[in-house]
Length: 261
Image (cartoon, rainbow, N blue to C red):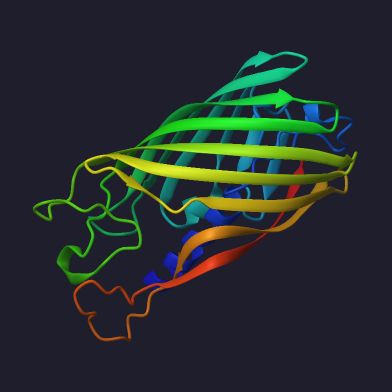
């Protein structure tokens, strides 16, 4: 059961590498796109997807989100995005994210992140978005702790698990509104741990194509990086320095559908 939960836990991350909900049934220009931009949903508008979060516009400036798949995995999660500036040529929003897992026993990872996301509109069809977030990773894993290596972990001098692992994440996204119903998006993400040790995670690059059918949006694409899938618990205990418990693949598909209400 735990192995199945671990694999399910990966799925929403694949969609979230590039996904933020869309606010309009038809994009008249790129300024109306909230998919990976600083824009928010209009008041009373909402989205619900297969892997995408459930999102709702509290006001014309504030959008809140929660991910039902995480909730099913006993992971409390919430996101708030507040639009500070909405000018003709650019937009700026502040973001706050919280996630805490409870299904992994006493070792329950979580994170609290805050940052900003800004979008520069180059034309009615092109936009460039940058985001920077600071994250406090709660109860991170320790590499080879207790003989069971983890795919993302912290090396420490004495092997003790630190209470908080600090890090930053930067994202750069290019949007091309090919037609009023077709959007091409390219995203690059880089995450770095700042303490207790300085470490750079493998960057990810994601390319997706989104088609707008009105109330239904379909997304298809791929993401390249380093992804750990499942556990191979049937194998013997690994030798020192080896980690056979996870499959690693450099490319994963990104598929999703979400609905506007």
